[in-house]
Image (tube, rainbow, N blue to C red):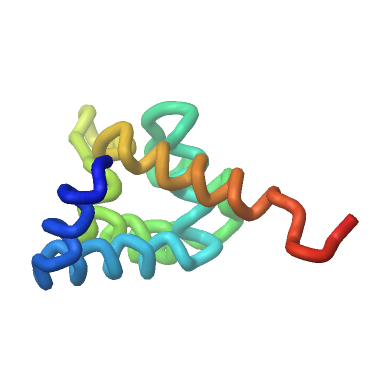
Length: 109
């Protein structure tokens, strides 16, 4: 993204607020696990529950928040709801965050 576009976006309070809500959603361990699992492809609540090792109600609660932030989408397949990442940007955010976290801390050898 070029600097002019970035400055334009930063001057829009609605966009900045939406971005802070996205980063807030990414700051929870269980939500991050859910999003990471969805990088592999769409999953049901029970499949996400097996990956995250938390209750079905906890998964459903976190999925509701992630849907509200437009990070995941859902579609009904028969009796089940199937969840997936909303778009490629979500995967990029996760990847960039992981790469940054894996960088050596300043002063480490």
